[in-house]
Each structure stands twice: as C-alpha cells, then as structure tokens.
Image (cartoon, rainbow, N blue to C red; front, side, top):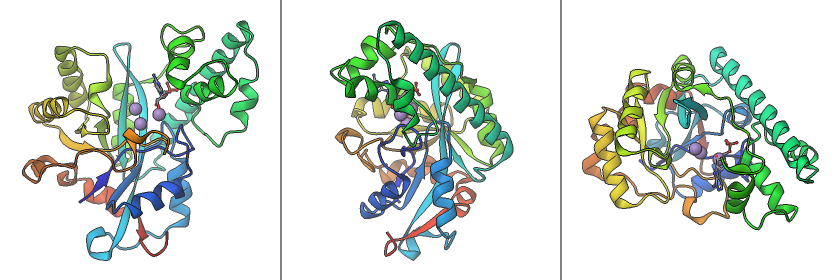
Length: 300
Ligand code: AMP
Ligand code: MN
Ligand code: MN
Ligand code: MN
C-alpha cells in the first residue's frame, strides 16, 4: 500500500489540473490517491465522468485507485480547522449544500478582501480571480495575485503583510462548524480525517481537547504523516491517534510542483509494525475505494 490521501488541483488552490495529479501519482507507484480540494469536488467530478469504475483491487490489477475526497475548512472555538473527507458518495445532497455554502462564503470573503485592497490602492483582484479555473477561491490565489503584480515579494510575505490575521486586508471567514463538516462527510458515507494536526496554533492540552471534540462529533481518523513533519512530531501524533482511538491517515497536501517539501507522495510511509490502525483497516475504507475510479497504468 502506498497511499496519498490529501492533494489539491486547480479547482481549489492547486496549480495543476486533476489529470496531471493522476498521471504523476501513477508514475510514482502510488496505489491509492484521494483528491481533496478545499470545499469543492469539481476535480473529482471531472475525473469521475471520464474514468471507469473498474476493478476494485488495486494491487492485483496493476492500477491506481482514485478515491473521492474533499478538505473542509471549519470553525472550532474560533480556530480554523481542516477536515479531510474520504467519500463514498461525493454527490450526496447534504454535502453538496454545505459545499455550495462554503464556496459562496469564499467568494464573499474574496470580494471583501478586494475592497480592502482597493482602500490601499491595489486594484484588479476581481478580474484576476475571474480568469482562474478555481471553484473554491482561496487566499492562496490572492497571495499569487499580490506577488504577480509586484505588491509582495513572496507568498509568505503576502500572508504576513496583507492576508494573515494581522494583515492589511485580512477578512475573517465564516466557516461551517466542526460538527457540520463531520456530519456532511458521514452523510456521504465517508470517513472524517483531521488534517495536519501539528499545524494549528494549539498547546498540547488544547490539541487534546480538539481531538476529543473531533471524536465526539464522529471524526474517525487523523493524519499522522505528511510532508515537512519532523520525526518527533510524527511520534507524538501517532501516540495521540492511539490515545483518542483515531485511524492513521497520511497525505502530501500537494499543491504545486514548485513546493518540493510537499511533492505528491512525499512523506514518511507507515512502519509495517504500526499498520494495525492504518486508515485502510477502517470498516468503510473498502466502500470508499469501491466507489472510486480505476486508473490503468497504461492509460495515463
Ligand atoms: P483559505 O482557505 O482561503 O484561507 O486559504 C488558505 C490556503 O492558503 C491554505 O490552504 C494554504 O494552501 C495557503 N496558505 C495559508 N497560509 C499560508 C502561508 N503563510 N504561506 C503560504 N500559503 C499559505
Ligand atoms: Mn491550500
Ligand atoms: Mn489544510
Ligand atoms: Mn490541503
């Protein structure tokens, strides 16, 4: 098993179309790939319409298995938390309703940011965003715009000076709650996975409280291996996952070939001795995989 269960296409803030991710993942020998765009499944739908459901056993058919996924931004006690959903039915209605609301919220926030930027004589954001293939508009796109137009030297600086909490054009988002995000994933027959737990500004005890609330709300897994995670942090996450009875997931959080630390498939693989609670042991893993698509290595 070589699974990458977290990556982004150009339908959210990834740089590449879904087809490119599929091709690159198969070339790297990945057995299961989940496309998990921020608050949209348009990349999944594009692939779903083009690819056969085919055989379900990736290892015996020499094909990669594509799993429908999503990464939902949500609010937990005023903090933005990301929950990855591995889905059986991405077109399920409650999920669709939630996604449309989140996308609408993203557009409203981008418009408010555009207004703030106009106040400091930065114009043209709306025109720039209108040309993008993105269905979910993110601050990452706005950071690209600020760098491209010469207002900021780097994406990091754009977040620091303009888009982050203390930035000149910061606008808070009004995300759904942690419970709403998990409920929508469960309604779609999915598994809710807490994304990159070490990236939130939380003390040890507060992270424990988050994991407790996540589990109470129906969350069943967490990422314990991803790009740029040091071995000490990884060990602590494994312990926490076991303490809160959460299955272990992993994914690169790939966005672009420009960022080498988060290349597709790049993160420490699970140790064979630690696979007892791996995500593929989850009772609903097989239904999510079976509902997915087969990519034959000769096709891509
Ligand atoms: P949003 O979901 O619209 O708030 O946009 C957040 C996205 O921007 C994340 O998914 C990251 O891909 C990216 N991002 C967040 N913070 C930073 C940062 N400090 N530097 C670069 N990219 C960032
Ligand atoms: Mn992103
Ligand atoms: Mn995230
Ligand atoms: Mn992500």
